[in-house]
Length: 279
Ligand SMILES: Nc1ncnc2c1ncn2[C@@H]1O[C@H](COP(=O)(O)OP(=O)(O)O)[C@@H](O)[C@H]1O
Ligand SMILES: Cc1ncsc1CCOP(=O)(O)O
Ligand SMILES: [Mg+2]
Picture: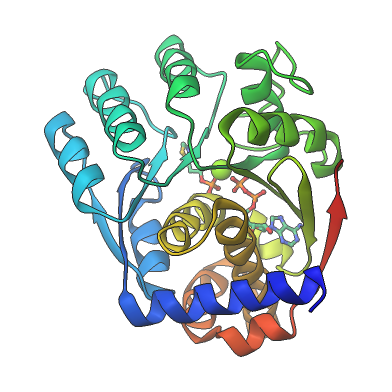
């Protein structure tokens, strides 16, 4: 079996296993898109639990199979919740996904993201500007000191974030997914470009956040690279199909959840992605 086929088989297994065993991936995520994240996790077959308090973060980190942390909206409480939860995940060897949403805004978000460096998230998912800024904050190659994130949006191209993504993945020994028109996923040695989706995904809030939540669900049953690539692929498939039925972002968001629910291992069999060896 060639490597592309082997990876595709692992992605298909990941989709099937999640639907079968319904792994629970808890979240501490932003208040803007929290409902959409939970719905997306349920749509692919996972189980969701959103928490805020420090002891709940630590408890759900231990009880769940994986976890999702997104720093999109900060509250004073998180100064305690976030490091404690990340530390618990790291010490208990639980896979976890970090979305450095809105990196660059405010001192507390910067401090929290700096603390996560030692707790090595299994998957880091962000748009190009967020990935470049996180690599900069962690003093890794490809990063820049000055964030070009515009609020939560990217002003960089995915291709400009490849070096930063690979450096972050090598630091964590995990995977990094850079989202955009074409998604780039890397574990620092093997990389993939995943195609599909829709421009409507830029016109709704939470496409990126919910993708991170879904990657957390997949990380419960697969390696970081396979989990991240499977998440990107299933979003590419569902987004492309939803766009054929929608005339605007409102209906797109609804129909996208239906397409996410319907997307199957068989759809991964026909999904377009290209592998690239980074070494
Ligand atoms: N122009 C586009 N065409 C197709 N898919 C897109 C486009 N922009 C974003 N996406 C998809 O939307 C999802 C979220 O990506 P993105 O918008 O980059 O994240 P964020 O919302 O965090 O900025 C990903 O699945 C990505 O593939
Ligand atoms: C608009 C906004 N503001 C703070 S968090 C957030 C949600 C961002 O969601 P996404 O990055 O998935 O579009
Ligand atoms: Mg985002």
